[in-house]
Image 1 (cartoon, one colour):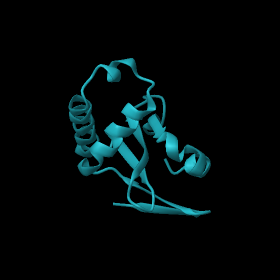
Image 2 (cartoon, rainbow, N blue to C red):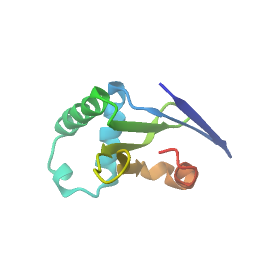
Image 3 (cartoon, helix red, strand yellow):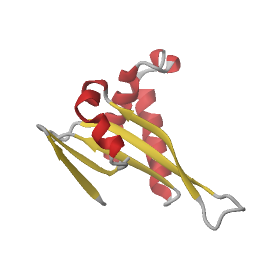
Image 4 (cartoon, rainbow, N blue to C red):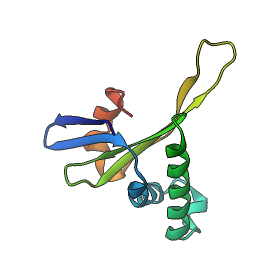
Length: 120
């Protein structure tokens, strides 16, 4: 499982592939952001179940990938998912970022570093 360490200021960020064990941190992050109306009426357990299903989907083959960003205390501070699409007119498939979230309490500390370096 590849890991990438980013060291800047007082915060150390690790970016790595998402295992199923990170489902709770991701579920918390997407609920915390408050952008999605359907999550406000959904139980935390239902959100967690869906996140686990999607992580399993990403782990099933290499056409779908999810990354997690965690701080030095191993707290999930963000995630991203990428998906591969075949385009018949290209020599190979293209990957696109379908999700990219950084926990609100960590955005000012790390968002520009993670995005600016293109790790997620």
